[in-house]
Length: 295
Image (cartoon, rainbow, N blue to C red; front, side):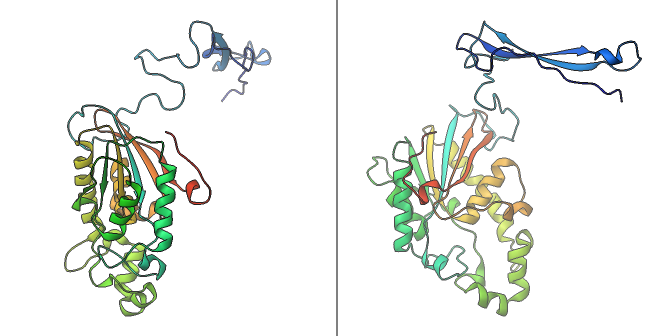
């Protein structure tokens, strides 16, 4: 490999509104290497393009290259299998602290774990944090801790809440309601598999996490094919993991690669093909100080 240098020629570091920076790649050999055989060394020149502003510069296909990713076609696979009537934005929220969260019990799909006083306050903080956001519809799991959180979040909005069974938490059979410490002692093999290899956790031939992936795909389709463009979704941590992974094309073996706090907010954008782009994951600033999101 012939050693070389990359040189950059630039205009003022602060481009005006009437000019933008354009990268030009050319081949150049440093003086000390001229006359020697070998590959030319790329040089990068950065100059001003007066024709377009930073907010206007576009690629040949017309997609803007300023302010983030310009296009996410085929970044993920379609979750709908059909064209949508418009692009969509989906805000995902995990329910507030529940009684079984507080007691360190396995929750699963049980309806006996209720939103605590702290959980209600967390839901109220979420509502305040999203108070400037417009949502066409709100979808929620019908399980009590998520349902109550959604009711707090949706307070004062005109459209009715929509409860989807496809947003319910994973069913964990005999582990539900048990304190984690007790489940570890009484069912060491099953509990360890649930904690360390959840996609292979199996009860009577049923794999709850794998099943959750199919349910999450159903939920995405129900949500994205609904009227409107901007949706709020309230559900549970395991379901959120599944929703996020399914949208990004990740399998059940990545179940524990994502964590979502109580009251954590995540945001997805979808293009008209139903392909997802994750914009924000587990936002929690609003849990610690007054903060209003705009996105």
